[in-house]
Length: 512
Image 1: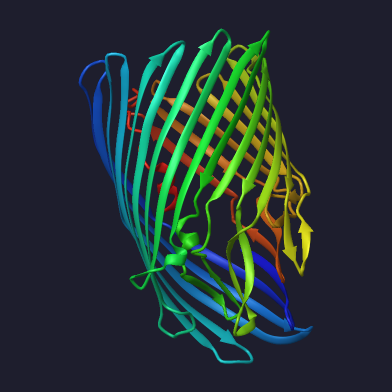
Image 2 (image 1 turned 135 degrees about the vertical axis):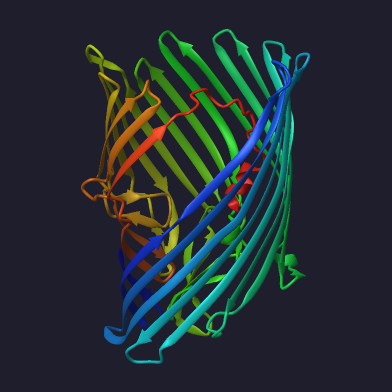
């Protein structure tokens, strides 16, 4: 369930209040089979094939009240059925790991292919204007081939690692709206990445040193209706250095690190497909998005069962939501993504973890963390720059109680204060969530029975306000996280897997 109020400061002051309810059914099946073969104690190879069937059916009901300059403009009632089928989804991995003398070799190759079909049938009833039937169909096909090879060799008081990673991706999305309320589209992206890297690790007394460098050459081509768009096609050449130091001073362990990283926008964020919510709200992607670059500094100190972690991040070209008006109709909002200039944030975490013996065969393990997140960010709202600098404090209290006769009790509590999340939005809730679980092992710990209660007091209700240009959006969302789960697990084979494949192109898989 959700409620929102949307205020649009255009030539007319529009206020839209909405109540919505979604019911979701999601049967999900996944199967995998594979093998690994141990040639000798130093060499092995293997592979697996995995197929996934994912079908999501969503029934949605919306009630919208529309006001123009304080007067009632219209009342809309929307009902829709959305069917999203993600099948087939094929994934194949092959790997080899071994040694030739002192040279260690690790190779992975991956192939993935997926079809995603999304059909939405929506009926929109208006009290004052014409009713609408909106039927959309989207087909997305993606294919990824990737390989990663690195070799490691001893060097002085440590080792050196040299390698490369290659990915080749094809992504196609076609979108149709029979009634013509939304423009049809047919977009395709071809992307290729070549990334050599090197890392040196050394142990000098109590000092551990690691330094690395990765170079990425990325070519991205964007096609609309089969025609290449030069202004949306990009080439990137970037270096990504990293360095880390760790040592111990008496009983205190210290570590420091710096790393430059990048995250490219997901293919959905780059798509031109349009999501129709109602006649005043549309959502789409942005094919002009640039990758995000992060510069991360991290320092940590650990003494016995206490630790302190400090992280500072400078983020260039962050991707955030923005709202714009249609050129031919100012009252219609088009919500999309865009690159902002930069965001900085500081995260300080103080934590404790300790095993405390309460009695014979009774052990309490508290895992307590408190974090402060302080962002620095400005975004335009109503023609002025608005600060989003309010800090946020998070609290995590984890408790594990080990009892006699293989009983285990777990109590977790999480919450956070109001504040800014490092975006053009403010959180206006604290989300106090309490979860309990009790489990018992049987049959020499082969059979486990676990009863869990998640978010027992239904505190996982999200409230936030988003600000963008002429647009202010307040939302309350109840994701129905309160639930009870009973699970039974029987371990037929208690030995750990000897499969050593780690995959290639893992970041690219997340984008898909």
